Length: 109
Image (cartoon, rainbow, N blue to C red; front, side, top):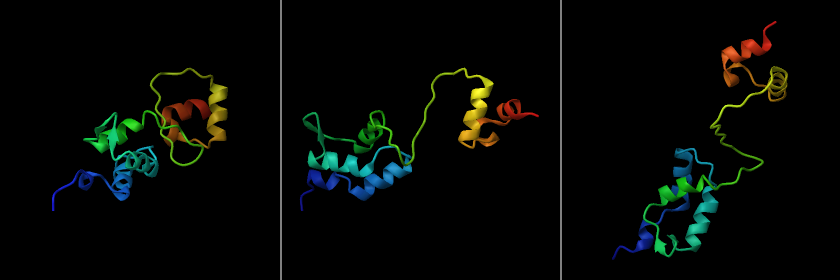
């Protein structure tokens, strides 16, 4: 039997496994459905590396109101002590979440 291009396309299970392995925020089923409907091609040509394409989707994936959300902070922010204390109390953040030193400064008696 001749090896067809479709033999190289991933299964949904492979996409799910890879997304879990790299802790991707991309919905594997949505990704799989999108490219399956397009015969695993993009911009008129076949996709050579679907794993790289999945990783690039993370830039465009919209955060959901449920499930796992990745947060990336790429700059420092300034916040007053009272506001930070309230945030910590509302979200039940402890020293393991904000750092021991920061926690001591905020909540020392």
